[in-house]
Image (cartoon, rainbow, N blue to C red):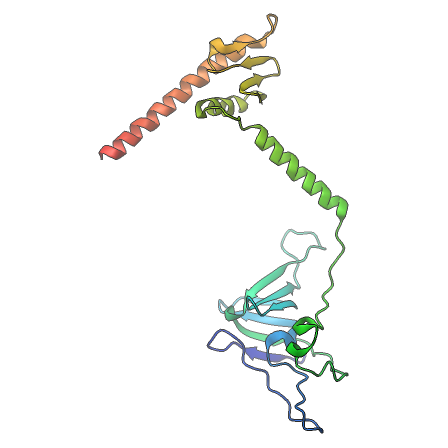
Length: 241
């Protein structure tokens, strides 16, 4: 297997690729640009400064951020076969790069021009394959994420005190609850109005859940008050100590 190897320079860049001698017309034959963009689209083996080995095809090279993007050969562990892994590497962290295949010979005068002088820039010959996007799957993920965000948002009271939110969160661990304006609706039957005490619970006269909710509210309020006092005492000790 033919390979062409380049090592990183001390400044964190890459040594220039040797240029060929001048052509018949006296014009330099620079079919191989001096920057790293000549490896675009080629399969390479990279060793990082941490001695990690990465094998894949060069997907892109960004001169602004001085980074190289590599499409790895190996599928990520636990991923589906069609899932690809891209690695973005700072050129300064690349110790060694070996090209594992030959670059196709340039056949036109335009292709023989310096990469940075071509109208397409250094990415003129970079044509990596981009797979199709499953629109339905993407929409399902978006809708699922939107529903999850909506559920989280619905659990936050608007214009309520921290004590009210703490009580809501405590009740939500064992009972189905939701906010109804500034009141807490439990089991879709019992409403807990401010100031969220057992006496502030109300429901239809025949609701069997009212007594249960009052008991739970009383217990949770006592527990939360105990926790608040414990935190207060801890803070005082820290200030005094």
